[in-house]
Length: 186
Image (cartoon, rainbow, N blue to C red; front, side, top):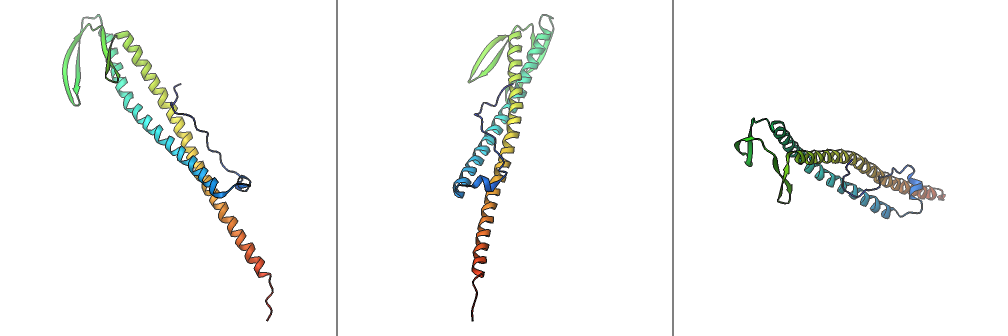
């Protein structure tokens, strides 16, 4: 299966025991580190969304080209004409009658067009469609994992903050309790 083409990020780990996790660590440093991880996961999420959008735009184009090549292959050698509408520019089409076509020109990108025999064009387009579909599946799985990591990291940040608030509250209460043990003599 095709990958996403992005470097892998280690999945976020849930902080089960915040007390143990924070032992010997500086609060501010840990918060900064967790926020950096969160930023990395969100950036990856955006990259995946952009790739997914590009592939979703490309997939119907590949399918349409593949259908056209298959229609030409079906009529090849039959002597029948195939009526087609060519897109000249956005929303402007021209009608054409094709008969016994042996090859097609395919845009490969970067302003490059190459002529292929129909059979090779069908194979190439099918390969491109398979890669596109596989990449979309891989991106969907990666997006799920990335969203989970975002949620886990957000929860971890909240848990560390809450732990700090609790520690300060305990320190304040123990300080107040120590102060209340002093007897007041009149």
